Amino acid sequence: MTVATTTPNATLPAFARHEPVLTGATILFALACLPVLMAMWADDRMFQDVDIWAKPLKFLISTVTYFGMMVWVARWLPAGTLDYFWYRLWIALIVFCAAAENIWITAAAANGIGSHFNDSNTLMSVAYMMAGIMAVTLLTGTLAYGVLIWRNANTGLDPAFRLSVIFGLIVTFPLTFVIAGYLGGAGSHLVGGNASDAEGMILTGWARDGGDLRVGHFFALHAMHIVPACGWVLARLMPVGMAVPSVWALCLGYTALTIFTFVQALMGAPFLPMIP
Amino acid sequence: MTEVLFQIANSMALAGWIALLASPLIPVWADRIAGTIIPLLLSVAYAGLILAFWSRAEGGFDTLTNVQRLFEMPEAALAGWLHFLAFDLFVGAWIVRKARAERMSYWLMLPCLPLTFMFGPAGYLAFSCFRLATSARKASA
Image 1 (cartoon, rainbow over the protein chains, first blue to last red):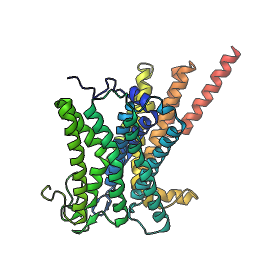
Image 2: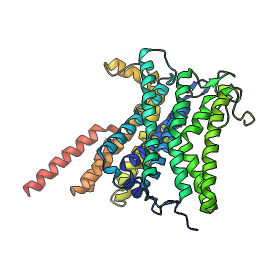
Image 3: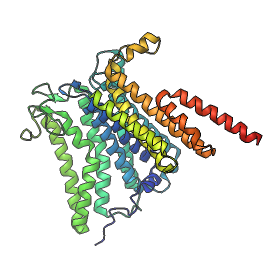
Image 4: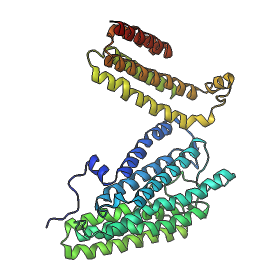
């Protein structure tokens, strides 16, 4: 069967037509990686035993994938959504929050100090508190997009893929809210183990000798990417009758996995200690 | 790192100036190379150096002595040098673009471009004088 899982016109002008502000923001944050990469190359400073520029780069890439996904799914918003004043105001607000968040993290790295968990002076304490509020504001993006697409009966999408997109976008909010909220108040992302990121897992840097709350945070935040990606595959491989229950199983399984990694970290156990 | 980057940046800037000198032959590409590509690459390197080293540089902008102290750190001095290279080349490309748009002779550009390359504002000043003289001559014709 033919599955309407993609839109034929996946070009930059098409993306810009579906969501011009977020398309511009995605490009801007992607380009911001360039000077950070340059700084990473030139600077030999470390923070908690890892390259001081690793964190700003990770957050920039994360912002690009976050907005990039929103741009990708914006085509399935109900017709006329972009014309609403409140919608445009809200989009401007979340782009502002993303910019402020990244400027805070990058400026802290430039000054050789911590951003998260930094209570060394009033300015940094207030900045950290504001960053939490802004992160939640930013996170409303996926929730609202999930609900808006859910309410649009005319997406033309295959039901299984549609379910994965809606579920992935919506579940990202509560999972991230809880896990990142806990992480924000925990004082450190590490639970037990050596208080260093030097021996972390390849690419992710996750702790291998103790719990790491960033694992659950990663799975929570990337539900918006991973669930629809898996849903797309299932929708292509299976007939609708099988694909929809399979996507439901995927959604619940993924949510369970995310909660498991969170609980695992809380118990001080590493996620994948065998991976170097 | 600083010495390698210095050499690379100098070579890039030189390539941009050569492209500008060859602009009658390759007008579109000369403008792309010297007006956009190379200044942007130099700007990325500059921004990266500022991110990495600005907070550690001594000095400031308030007194000449403090400005001099800013350049005591090699990485900050390199950033300052990249600033010169990028902006001088950008101005050079602007001069060529402006001259072409106003149908000024290429030969008038020949002293302006090396002057801008070596002494930035002096080249801009020379171009502005030529421009004024040319427009005065055209007006009187």
